[in-house]
Image 1 (cartoon, helix red, strand yellow):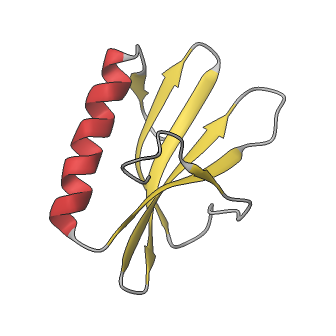
Image 2 (tube, rainbow, N blue to C red):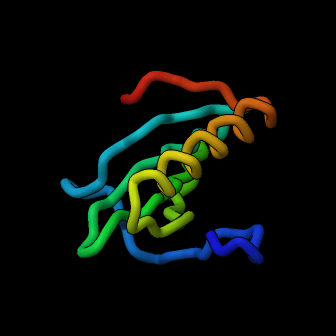
Length: 93
């Protein structure tokens, strides 16, 4: 996500694959969000997969990382914002 852009960029690429590493899963009402990393040349991508009953999952690339400290800060901030927004962590499937 760009610093000047509050909305992540939508991606049509399906990220559920062997190179997608689930970090955590949160739920609010009937919506589940799965956050994970995909390793790419030169770094990693943070992806969010949104699942709702009766709908196809939606994959959105949230951010690109080239440094681990940058990824750590972003993930800590994301977890704080989700908790403040009423999302609760659930076990992976």
